Image (cartoon, rainbow, N blue to C red; front, side, top):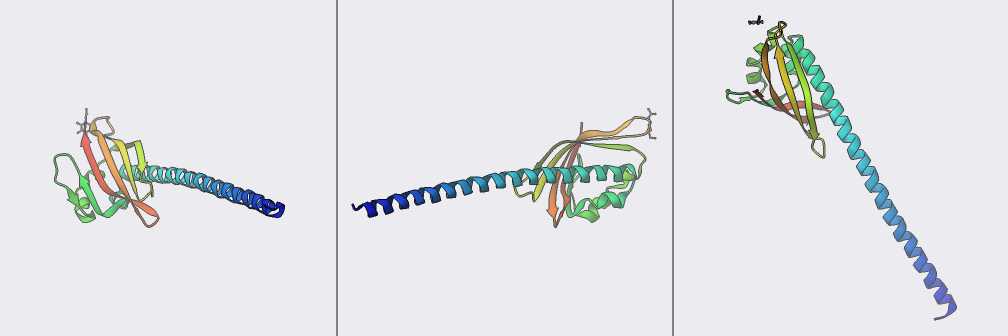
Length: 163
Ligand SMILES: *[C@@H]1O[C@H](CO)[C@@H](O)[C@H](O)[C@H]1NC(C)=O
């Protein structure tokens, strides 16, 4: 091998190693960016659902049925204890007269788990409803499955049962 060829080969090898190293570095950086984006998405979805839950609680405490219904998807499925499934907002609305009573509702979030793409969010809560004199009307478990609708989330499945 001539010194010139050897020199060229050495340069090529170094060049290849540099390119390979850079490609690997770029992949690592891309993976980091994706991890950060995913974490941020998870946080922002949780914040959004927390806010929606607080707003919903306010609607119930204000005995405002329309305000409460606005959180439901048009194709909502409501599954209450000892009752058949209620499908659709019109059907669901018929069963919301309880909101008109004067009581204090507390929605305590226990868990918020968004799907990887954020299109579905599972939220587990404790729900209590008490008359002003402290008597419990409901003290139980609640599960919301939120569905992403454009840039908002709507409750698609609502399951609850009394303790
Ligand atoms: C509390 O208020 C509710 C609703 O007015 C009533 O039905 C219940 O009997 C009251 N409980 C007590 C312990 O006074």
